[in-house]
Image (cartoon, one colour):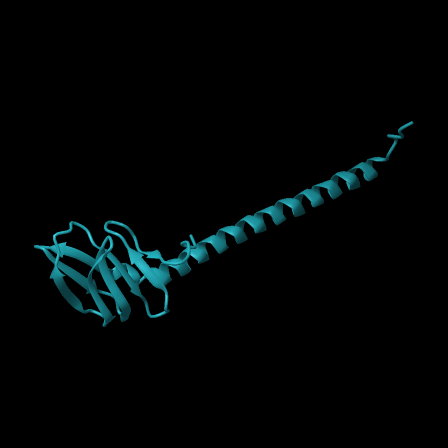
Length: 139
């Protein structure tokens, strides 16, 4: 038989203990959520810093001429511009702030590939953000 004849002080101790355990559980869950959000934010910020100068490198066609611009503050290397399988222009190095014109092209869109100062290889399709070659974007 169950004995429920506890004194009032004993019931208060049990309720207080359960409340304390609940408070610890809620605090632990909240800390875990905040840590997960902070880690995700730091990952996004690191990816943004990694891509900061890569976003400023572009290629386009105007009046039948292919233009490549390195508007970043860092040099890029092994620059290749092509339309499908045909290479339109290649450069070993393109210093920061430099603009190059290449051979004439009748293609409507160009695909740009280059290596940044960290040694990462990037690919940029027309109208798209740069993508890291050889691996998925981390975010």
